[in-house]
Image (tube, rainbow, N blue to C red):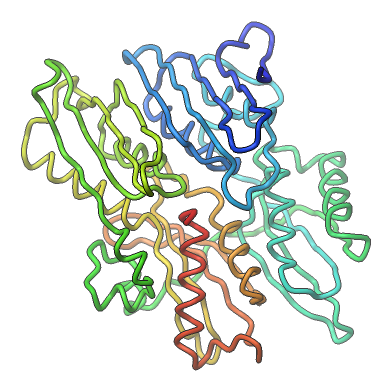
Length: 420
């Protein structure tokens, strides 16, 4: 038995059967008119809510689509808000408007807010706050941390609200109450509009840009980016095309290491490459690897038969599957800075949950974050979302002159991001 969540007249558009047995997947079904990039948007939303797709089936005739995904909570995930997830998925369906949920398909200028948080200092505080904000569907864009002489911490969070309700007193009170209830009575906060806030930061230096955004990584560069030996062995992917099985479609077959957000990475790549998927099947994890079969066409309805187009698509898919996120640690004057970058979709959307996963990894290592900011960077003929974390130095885990500790940070952060 599962739980179905639906509204009057549209209950069949998005159905969610929530499992009652630990370790078994819940099932999400989307049955609605199709639109370009809908599958990618659905997978992005599922990832945003802290879920991993264990297997799936996709079918569309270009007019109507039927998507079925079996999902499991990601490791160290937030509490899954199933009702909010369904509302978000309903808002993606072309013909359904949810009155209390914004239309996420339309471009909008975000309203930024400033959350002032006052607390006693402790390790992992930034991630704990991030966890609460994630459950409330509030996105962090910049953080400034300062410590008063009496040992108290003043954190400034510049945030936006996915529900677009943070301008209301009720939503603000709900947010502060949730933070206080979760983190304890020693924490207090206040929320106000961040007038004049602009997202972004000064560009990275050319040496860092060259190392961080290379599409092909040599063995020496793998060492520079601190990939541990077992992770280097995992960096393999096979992409093949078969035009003999269908008169109208090209079969795209992918075999690669399983990782968090894999299907999202595949679908955002095909969407940006103007490839439409008519049928697809994502098979269960097989000893750390996953098989994906997709029947695809070009936007003109033709098969992908040109060798150069096949090679271009295969190369792009391998790059996005093998290196969907870039992680580096560099010196910034006397300080140590952690850099995390992910490609931005052509529609302007970045990857979800990056801030959450990075702060979790740093909390597990006992590393405090002095400041954090998120901005955009043009490199390698595309736009990237770049996260910059200025790390606090400690006697227990020195970073300034310890390569082994720096490599450990990069390795732990990458594993948290990829779900390994």
